Amino acid sequence: MNTPNITIRLKNNHTKLSVPIGSTLMDVYKLSGLQMPYGPVSARVNNKVQGLKFRFYNDKDVEFLDLTSPSGMRVYERSLFLVLSKAVEDCFPGGRLLINAPISGGHYCELRINRPLTAADVDTLQQRMHEIVEANMPIHRMQCPIEESITLFRNRGMESKALLLEEQSSLYTYYYRLGETIDYFYSCLLDSTGTLGMFRLEQIDENGIILYGPAVVKDEAGRILSVEVPATTFSASASLDVIREYHHWLDIMGVSTVGEFNAAVRQGRATELINISEALQEKKLSAIVDEIVARKAKIVLLAGPSSSGKTTTSKRLSVLLMASGLHPHTLCTDDYFVNRVDTPKDANGEYDFECIGAVDTAFFQKQMRQLLDGEEVLLPRYDFPSGERVFEDRRLRIGEGDVIILEGNHALNPLFSQQIDEADKYRIYVSACTTVALDDHNYVPTTDIRLLRRILRDYQYRGYSALQTIKRCPSVSAGEDKWITPFSGNADATFNSALLFELAVLRTELMPILEQVSEREPEYSEASRLRKFLKYFRPVPASDVPRTSLLREFLGGSSFNY
Image (cartoon, rainbow, N blue to C red; front, side, top):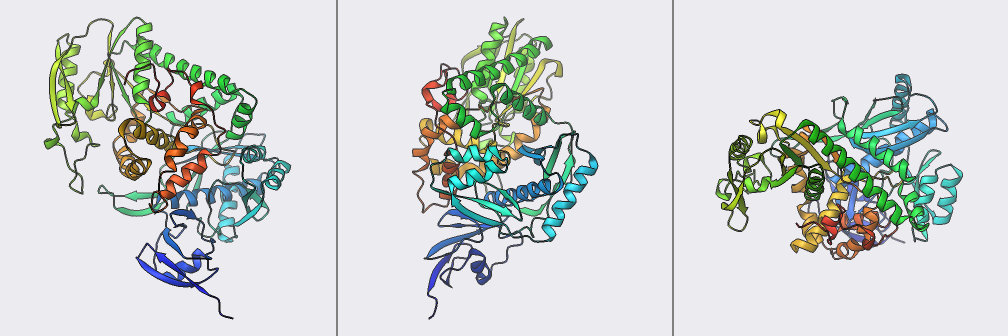
């Protein structure tokens, strides 16, 4: 009896393939004639990301993904985490691996083996990882009733994974097996270890290492040049200090993973965790204000990527500065845009509002020098509908006790304030730098936090759908990578705007918005991933969030005017 065929519509080359029912994604790729130098690593099947062992039993649309796509890179990274986890299990039985947020082009990991980590330990670990890769070991995706997986992880001492799964309502779940090592990851992995050779480890302290995986190298126009492991080595970083500070905060709250957070919410501790989180942020901002006052800085430059909470941070700084007896005046870099007709254009001939050339840095610096010299200036306002700078009767003169807070994307770029005396400036970088992990091996991408904030804000205040916001995400990220994050190292202080409880609050608000993205849209895969991600968090009502919270910038109901 002949096996019936099904039809696969292949989006990569806009062709149709007739394949036997039961074929895998890898079978389809081999029949497709596609040549992907950096893949495939996964595929969108009906606009939902699947691993290469996915089998077809009816007609589907398929788009293969490689390492140059964000989804493909995430698949590779998760698979590399599993290899690292197995290497730790093999080399240091009983050791505990914690995979944290991205840092310096890699991932900060802690390895707890009841003694300080040595250079020889790291070499041993790296060698074992290479052996696992060279053996091309199969990665098995195992499915079982969720109660069985919870028991399995708990019996192996993997409590963070057991707690995470306890909150899920699914009848069945899956986990991954690599040899005798088991692990849980929130989305798909590669089907074997043979292609995971792009990595290196670097020790940074007595129990900390950085796992460097592949990175996409692009030219100025955004064209892909190569995919390779970064050659740079780690140097002292404010980001590491922020990670350690946040872990200290989590210790204070008695919560280190989402599973523990969910358990605390079930115990009725949600309001307590919200109040402590808000108090810790306020304490950090107060310490920053004390530094500003001690330095007698006259201009506070505050920058950060999209949806990092810059606006609320500047407003809370203003309140704290007033409480210190100073008189803050908040300005925005957007008001110093050049007229639209003078805005530089990108490689596609579109206005590039993200580049430093879109801002009249010379005019800004002239006005700041005038203010510091005691002169009165007529402040500009950028009129977005007309695309022109206008002057209304908004004047400013500063004296003793006055402080200017300048908030905007380019505030930390040296070109923006190079003619202003260093003694007069204090720089702050604001971003959702790190937050609570899902479990020991699944970190929460901070880019996801900002994207979810932006989806809610755009939907509520700008009339944009989730589809529209997700579509713009690549261009927004490219602008941030080029014009904002490279200058974060210039900051005198870094403020982590992430809140322990925020995704639990945003879950209820965002789920119906994300569900509006149609399966017919390519962005459905991202909306689906975000929905799955939010479901790990036990919901917390927005009514519990204080009106002064940074999260209110996106939720609404803030006591600050925007």
